[in-house]
Amino acid sequence: MRKVFMTALVLVLAVACCAHADEVKIGACIYRFNDAFMLRFRNAMSAESEKLGAVITIADGQDNQTTQDEQVDAFIADGVNVLIVNTVDRMASQSIIDKAKAANIPVVFINREPTPEMLATYDKAYYVGAKAEESGTETGELVASYFKAHPEADKNKDGKLQFILLKGQNGHQDMILRSKYSVEAVKNAGIEPVELASAIANWDKLEAMKIMNGFIMSIGPENIEAVIANNDEMALGAIEALKAQDYNTGNPEAYIPVVGVDANASALEAMDKGEMLGTVLNDADNQGISAVRLAAALAEGKDTGTIGYEITDGKYIWIPYQKVTRGEKQ
Image (cartoon, rainbow, N blue to C red; front, side, top):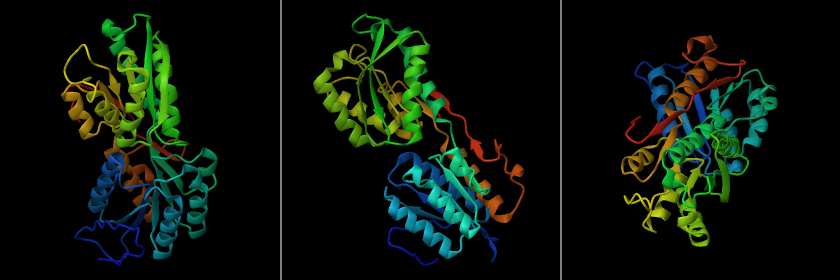
């Protein structure tokens, strides 16, 4: 196994039995390993690399852009053929593009989208992800559908939806777009949304639980008609806080609909138990597979039209979201 070239780097080698000297070497940077969605993404990338006979090395950025910048430098110095990058700070994408361009190696960004202006500065820079506005719209639609189908959900009978909004990370395009479009979807369904409170919980379950505990104490669970979270981990944190107050434990009179995004295993389990209303599948598997296929094709100078995923505007692979409600499995 190759030598670990920096303390913060975690190596994940995926080598096919037929590997040879000029095999594709992929350097992949993940913003942090302690993220349920990115774990699924990493697993998909590793499995697909093995199928292709490529070697992928995956680094944990530990939620620190300086650390990640050092990892990018190390990958380039180590002679990788292509980079896959999930930035800690999406605004650092330009610096990474400049480094890749100087080394004449392709770079595929994932999950955190550089601006179009950034991608336009290098003909070998791409993005693989999902359109965050779709997930926002779909979470809002899940809540609106429930509110219309369950008159008892309108606790104060004012015809308006009083909700809590749990947001991801400051500056992340998914946080911005999911928050905006989820509320717009409620409004477009003919329901007036009333935001009781919102907070940044950084995609984290424990942080969301603490924040939700504070909202419950200050607002009162009897006044909350829904919780919209930008991802499943934060939704699950909100549910833990509600359960501590004997909400969402099976009593239909003490239930607050909670929605998230990702369709991770814990969310599906919570839905089966009746603790969580629904989620939206953020297809980490297809995003991870397509990112590796694109990276390998670029590294080998092959036609990207053969990878099995459509590339739009010469720069983007978009994987669609999908609503998931109780009883559905992924």
